[in-house]
Amino acid sequence: MKLQVAIDRVSLAEALKLALLLDSEVDIIEFGTSLVKDYGLYALQDVKAQLKHAQVLFDLKTIDEGVYEFEKGYAVNADILTVMAGSAKDTLTKVYEVAERENKEMLIDLMETDDTKLVQITDYEHAIYGLHHSHDREDLLDAAASVADFHEKYPNVKRIAIAGGIDLENAKKLAAQGLTETVIVGSKILKATDPIAAAHEFKEALK
Amino acid sequence: MKLQVAIDRVSLAEALKLALLLDSEVDIIEFGTSLVKDYGLYALQDVKAQLKHAQVLFDLKTIDEGVYEFEKGYAVNADILTVMAGSAKDTLTKVYEVAERENKEMLIDLMETDDTKLVQITDYEHAIYGLHHSHDREDLLDAAASVADFHEKYPNVKRIAIAGGIDLENAKKLAAQGLTETVIVGSKILKATDPIAAAHEFKEALK
Image (tube, rainbow over all chains, first blue to last red; front, side, top):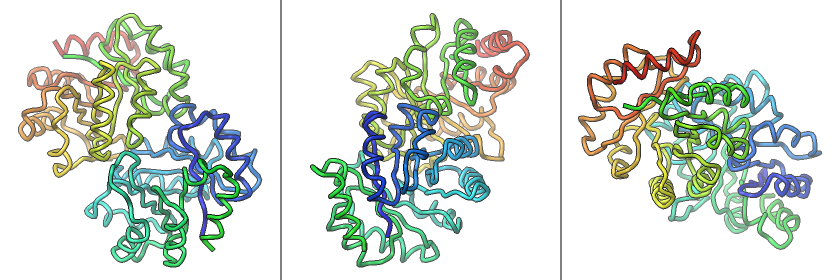
């Protein structure tokens, strides 16, 4: 299983420092939506070249103007870009076409998406489907139960990622369950006293 | 009725040039999502001070981390910020609280929102509700019919804006109908040979 660390709500300088620190320990480094919206994609274009190991994800959260945003995001060297499941079906199809054409990846953020919409959008074979619990919601997420429920409903989806308050215990449960491709961790790594050691512990838990 | 011009998918320098050109002719100048995501909010912070007349809207399209994004958006001098109706209810409530506290405005973008969600979110008294047809959708929007339909279902919503391929004929129909507060126009002004004259025509049509 892959470990993705989500860097968010810090300065660009701090984000770069954290990315370089964690590059060798994690599989994917996410530059969160706050970094995109605060600094812009142009400011992120040199990030990829500075990293030796990890893939780079920009959490664009595209919801419209899909081709414009995805072409721009890949042009500034993202390996993976995100699109909201709540976008129009036309948007999802268009960004998937851009990702396939560029030989890059896309993650569909399923936050706040109901089954009426989900049944229409589980046909993007190479896309990663990201189960995502809003930061702003007050209720808590049971990660393994969410994945099990999603897999039962949509067994044709092969690539699942999950984000939202994931701790070591959640990570171990997800590893044992064996249905998730990528576990996305934020504060449990970034706010640890020793982020490298914390990332290492998560990698061990996901083995 | 108010006229909002939406500037999108151009360079920041071009956006500023257009904003200064149209400042005296329109009521609200929207800096589109592409400008936010390409250049970042910090790059937009001086825009408001350069304009003499129009309100400034940053099309943030917030979908999560609402308080962070809205506090940042108002801190860089936006008068109006946008949030997606597809956000969690908790996100909408939190950004509304920020807008009220800062004595600023918010527009809820209703793109791809069904009635199940709409009935839960029409209670933000001072919010502007933006009927919005995705740029990526292939089908066309009948502006006046959309407003009539929305008003019939949600008569308690007092502030309505509409965007999506609005031309002069649509604008006249909306003015005659009298239910819309703000008409949002993009290419019909910005791609006109004389954008100032085009904006003036729209203002006349909305009288």
